[in-house]
Image (cartoon, rainbow, N blue to C red; front, side, top):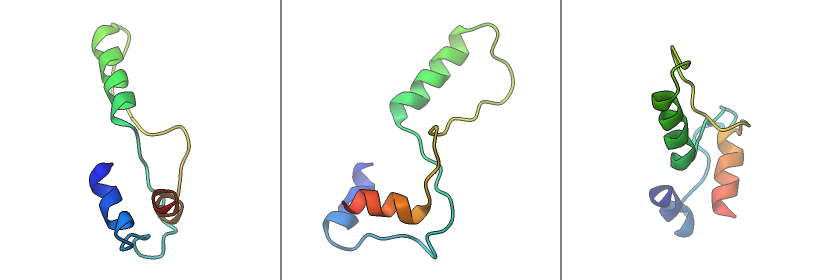
Length: 67
């Protein structure tokens, strides 16, 4: 996230395009937890989808970073 914050701190950040597109995100610690669980649990099979529990648009995400 640090490399994403620099443009905002310099006043150069903002949404990409219209900002209406959804921006899936997840914290690296949460993704590591998902992968650890999948490796340790015998009942996990198939595709895993690791994203945050709620969705944000690119504009909402940019606004939060700029706050």
